[in-house]
Length: 339
Image: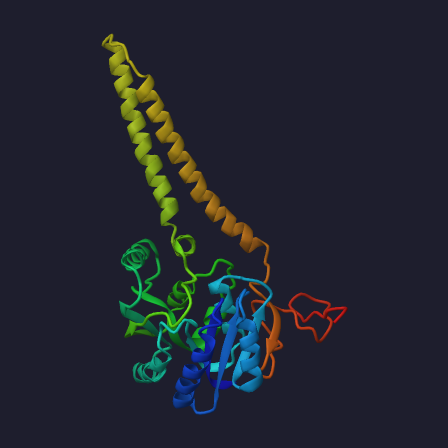
């Protein structure tokens, strides 16, 4: 067990890693002396990120480099790092340095003064982001706050400091579709905000294009709210009411001897009803798909290789496919027959 773990999921971040390592090391030594570890998780990068991580682990005994077997996605890569870290305090930070590592000391002080288990970063400003990105992020957090049953803080990302007991509670949640900032809010304990100004990305490009942002937002809504299903039921109730009014109108027109011209209006009604039905089925399919994924009970991540940090032999939520020992049970370490 170490005093401090800093967990960093990385995907195609070779241009940031050297600067990241230097700034994280300086911040960790200021906060915890030499009793710390840097857990760098390579999420299937296609550039030279793993080569750099492997070299850092060889040169710095504080670095634990974890190479996943493929690209699992940001939230599962972060889960892998959290599952394998050993710190009493755990800082979660992205590799792009938009969240300054130098804030670590202030976050630790805030945690101690407030006797809190979680200190989460709240963005006062977002430098280097487009107006569209800022507007959609602003709208997403407020929609999420209204739709979910959990009080998820506004304008807060994954940048946070957690106690070991808060992390242990988080690791007790094995669901596949993970929205970690919502899951941390769900576990409770005392959680306090830490306001800061988000900086521009140090190098490279954002790993969250519009498609991934929409998928992430939908995972958040379906993972922490039944509001989409309630929306479907409300839409069905409203359409039922409209259908009743339409039936009354048709009956009135028939009794009054009026001819109902109605091909255009009929087709309009059919198209609207069909669209709403497909939308409702899509929502139900999304929830059923999540249940299907959970029912398979697959490990959340697979580690291909670990470098530095003294190695890790246990994982609660993943599979360590280390090439050192044979395994006869799931969750163990599997060897390669030819090396």
